[in-house]
Image (tube, rainbow, N blue to C red; front, side, top):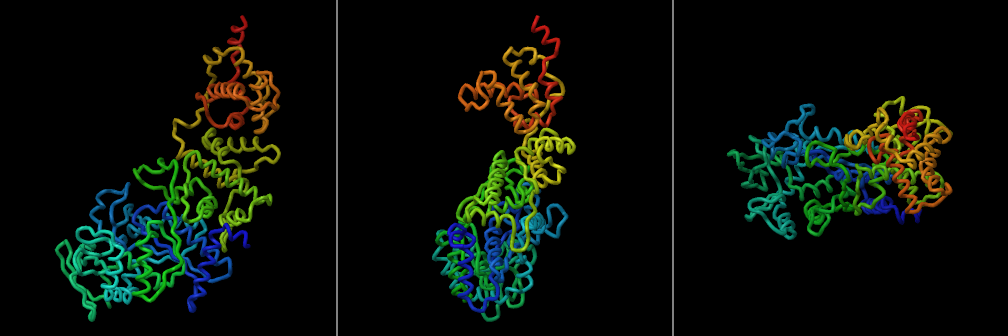
Length: 557
């Protein structure tokens, strides 16, 4: 396994986590922790917060060691702003905890649950199992009271730690709770009246734990933190507090949390000096970008979500995108024409592994993508080219009977017996065509011949079409039609069929293909020509490409 580990980032991180576990006697389980704020649609960048920890926790489980993957829902965070696509009237709830904001669609218990639901469904498809923790339940249920009081009594120490790394303080209060005044409190109160966190702590009594606060709504109040739960710790204290509370051994976070003076740096000091704990093994992960995702939502600025990706990518491919790159490398998820290339790369990887020609690292990556320690992910039994399936769906407009006929014609040696054999990939291709190919780009097959164009053809063009039509029956397979359409211009130039491409030959082929496309689908380009011919059937192709007898007779006269 030494060779595999040298290029397998998951195994290397798991080694570090296991070593840290062994240095912490009495820690029963290797805890990997993720945290997500359900303040809006949970996008593909957020998914990396889950997948890095998932792969490490899964590797630990594969080694027969006890592991636990925590997902802390930061649903007690304040609503900062109303995301794109949501009724702007929800701005009245800005400042309230996410679980204290109504569901924008009226179907879930609250705002947070509205955005959790589709993410949970995506995780199930991806084979990711997590133990969910609601921070609302933890705080309001009094689970952190001791930790909150500890932080409040250590406020001067925490303030000095934060102050050393602080680069600037805005007017009033910063995100960490630091103020321009001398008094610092690592805690934010939600007002008992308006339920917003537009509050200022006036005082805290170390002995009685009484806290007094005022709110911009005009309300003033007090509470006792050893028996009441009016708010939550600020982020840079809350995070390390949870490391100690949950005995976290591994966590990854975005690169913005990884720089000097960042949340992780500060958290390392806070967990040690305030809670007597240790920072977990840590990895910073880079950003996740997308290509061609603009059509995903009518809401301007909405980032694509895991559900969006899973509509066009099989679950194993999504896992593969996240495991094949080291955490510090960026990821790009394609939603445009590049999605076909992703499927081609995946199919090539599967082929190499099955043939025994893949590297050990590639074999491990495929294994991590395709299964977990507990489950095997469903995959397409007969994975035909995504590009081909998309073209067939485009041409047939999803007619199942016609789709099956075409796929059978494409596989004469071992005909496809049922569309279930090519699912779920066929369904992913159909969704991609329906949502990412504009109506102007869809294939519109002519219902009748373009007689004007056919009548205007010169002898060379007519001869090319005759050679194509005459060869249809004899070459009625995908490979046969491919050889035929590329071979017609070679014959017309007097070249052997095995002639290598040249500038002259390529130009002749482009001109011939463009003519055939115009006669079949109104445009100079379209789906791969052999696929299009199979889809239309020999009779329809012959009818659209053959000049009418009257026109031909007139031409001879």
